[in-house]
Length: 197
Image (cartoon, rainbow, N blue to C red; front, side, top):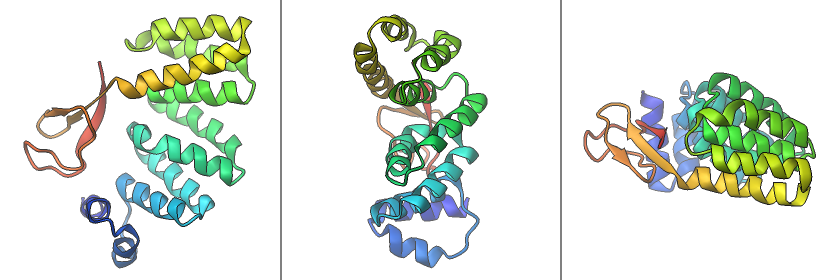
């Protein structure tokens, strides 16, 4: 897709804003929306960043590993943190086994003091994801007994999910530990998806 190529050039060139201006009114791919969100975020336009990051994730929830941290930060700064909870609910419907979405949603709920809801999210979704059950159980117990420890464990769980990452090219199957913009084997641009061990 041409807009993916534009997003790739914008990311590797370091001239994101210039390239986006030249790209004009391209129909944006999820990656181009991500780059637009980054530019808005860097310029301090948090509302625009939230809009682009949200649209990116609605089109492709599997990009949550790239987008969610910035989206949460921009939402908080724009006073739209409540919208993050709604977005997580939508994303979880589309990708109920995505560890980043599961832990991110539980984290947001815990931070908002909605401990029972955080427990429900983890109980419902974490069991089927190999990297989550043990730590999720510890978090569930803490949510019921020690709120401070629960917040610590929620952060630890999110960190564990981020550390157990692997990416696979959709075109040739090549696997990498870091997210590459271009496949070293087949040369495809922005073709990697997150896979779970």
